[in-house]
Image (tube, rainbow over all chains, first blue to last red; front, side, top):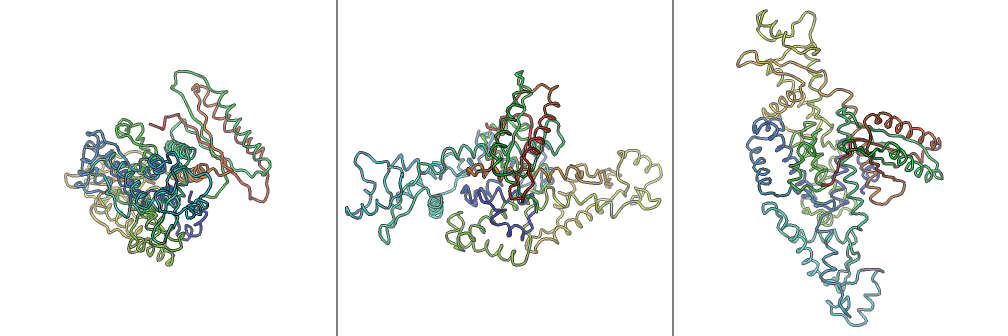
Amino acid sequence: MVQIRVNHDKLAKALNVSDIDFFILLLVINLIKTFGHRYGKVIDAVSVAARFAVYLTYLEEGNNLRRTGFLHHVEPRRVKEIVSEFDSLLENGGSLCLLGSVEPSYLIGFSYVWLEKYSLKNGELMTQLFNLTESERLILEAGFPKNIPGCLLLRECDVEDLIRDLHEKAQSLLHESKRTAFSDALAEHAKYRLLASETMQEIKITKETSAYLLLKKEYSPKGRQARMQTMVQDLTRSFQWMYSWVDGESGIMRGIETLEIQEDRKEEALQELDQMMRIWADKYHTESDGSNIIALQFLLGPHQEISA
Amino acid sequence: MVQIRVNHDKLAKALNVSDIDFFILLLVINLIKTFGHRYGKVIDAVSVAARFAVYLTYLEEGNNLRRTGFLHHVEPRRVKEIVSEFDSLLENGGSLCLLGSVEPSYLIGFSYVWLEKYSLKNGELMTQLFNLTESERLILEAGFPKNIPGCLLLRECDVEDLIRDLHEKAQSLLHESKRTAFSDALAEHAKYRLLASETMQEIKITKETSAYLLLKKEYSPKGRQARMQTMVQDLTRSFQWMYSWVDGESGIMRGIETLEIQEDRKEEALQELDQMMRIWADKYHTESDGSNIIALQFLLGPHQEISA
């Protein structure tokens, strides 16, 4: 995670960021920097969401273009365009795709297609796409990290082909009007991302030629991907409950306890807390018709002043 | 809160929204529909955050325009523009303002300036800006809701002046290049928002003339505003901790307990939970040098399947 509050603390303070703005910064900066979504993609995603908000108002306001426009400060002509965009999306059974996944699909899929297309067959050498002498090969291989996947080293053009294939596969799922054409800049961007995330490594063979080595079988380990999914679900739940709490709806309870704890008692305290919650839930759980299921979500971490 | 999952459940399902996309929808739709930020303002806010992400990468990558551009898929020329935007903001000690506040400042301030400028002086009548006969006045006043603030009814032009004053006050805090000019559409938008939020009410005096009545001393009650502030702080904390949890950092604990509970035992269960947490925190709290402060945040609400 990009700790903007920590690493760029002075910067944020110097810029007098309000709480809600800090929250938006946290989300957007992590989508772009940590997860690697393209700059333009994130802005597009939010634009789609904003247009969808306008569409919902239009439905709620009895299809009144003028009133919808005034409520959100959008020209009626533009509201009309937005309405027809979502009307036709619904009619054609399309998907409302903003980002699609926490990490970009063309990065997640990369190791997988490399392994599928270029895994070593019986007796093949990893370096066989390059003209190397026996000693050049041995020196090169001696520099490989341990535990790398068994597949061919690729040339620059092979890597670009893989990226292009992944891009086109991802695009084919989108409506024609939503597709982004493949470009050199896009290929270069993906290559940089894959190098920066240590999914692959570039090795100079000669001044002009590079070889690319796959370092990981997955862009992001399966466990991490599952945790990211849980994170998004937990945050969505918190979001919904906190809004209900703001509105004063019943059935929501929110609390925070702050304490100073000795390092050597922490383990014990956390275990006790975990057990305590389970015992509490067991005590009050009564199987019935499923109409009164509640959930208790808790999160513990180092205390930090959130407000500036 | 706009319960898109509930009210527009079928719509979201029909559109095959992924978890992360649902989260973004939830945020954007509520900023626009519930809190009343302008459509364009929300998109602008995210664009600023995305540009700031690019700027941070530029600083981290040793001021390398080309590498920054590739990492986020932005043209180096554009990176250069972004860099100079934030460089000069920092140099001039400016503020990085995305939305500024959870609800728009020109809506929050509205009741306040009305009361300040048009509160009733000794013996003044609420209707004195209108030429009404005694009986017309009595009939009009008989229709007023109870407990409305004691201030003048305004003409359309007075309301527009108030909105213009608030707009200009908000704009004067921004850098010149960031200001939005006042327009009829903007005035109309604010008027609709104030009517929709029941901050004021429109009363037809004649076919052509409307009177505007202030209904509330605050756009949003103080308690609600404080709760919204707490919501944003809680969500920011959850966000930071969950990211750390995804990264496998130590010192973070996350959990969820789901149970079915009988309505008549709920009150007791919630009280017990609250007390239990406090006793636990007291037990492990040891005043020391302040280096090991932790916080436990919990939230309870009706169970809902988040994933589609």
